[in-house]
Image 1 (cartoon, rainbow, N blue to C red):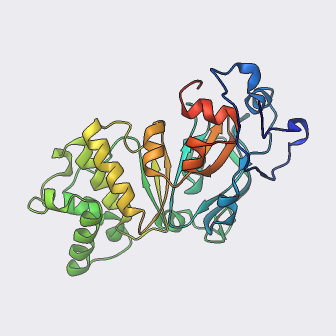
Image 2: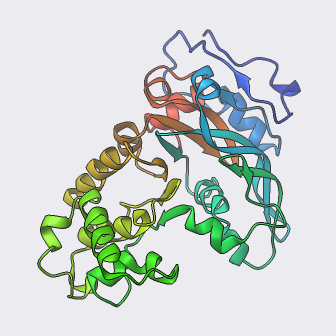
Length: 308
């Protein structure tokens, strides 16, 4: 078996290993002992991630360097360094508990709300360090749209749901709010479904419609990045397809970082994919390469459902 894994014992710094050589033989079903990277992680080590050169060459909007996070004494994120390319969809995949959502929520500092959390390292949004002492967290969150696993519309009208971020920012002009609402609902591909009932409660919509309202609310203030934390996990297949189509459309205007457990979804909607395991990045590169010709046997077997 030809492998791109070598000298794992020495790869414990936070510098990514750039590899472009994929495994050349049939890996078969795979045994635990074949997973050199996963075994090292299970021993508590933090091997360098395999990062494809296309990621390093892309212009980035988010830069994460040597980032660590603890919940009291339990470390959840281990020395993560990654660039999120501008104007693209990047997916975070990995087994439950691997740190995907924790990393995503670290970008808008939602983990600050959890007692006992502490961090080391840096995350920069358009070259601005988000954990600098001078950063106003509320202002930071205005620069980032966030959509959660379950739709969470507010108990108010569709219109007021969408324009809420503008209202709390002090916008009162009716014409501005109406224009922004229609623009966002059109961008969220739900304008035609709700244009005649904007004054009715958003709680009366279906789950898929509610999630698109939440996306419209997340983009109404024109964020620099849209963060999606498993946005389809509570939706049926039809609603999921609509959200995926929407992600493809809005990625033309926004950088999107999405957490998903669905391998097919990651393959369909993302341009880049980062495979995580126990708080570490294992392999990161263009989605097509990770799903078709990954450098690591662990990645190949995870995306094909043979472990995880």
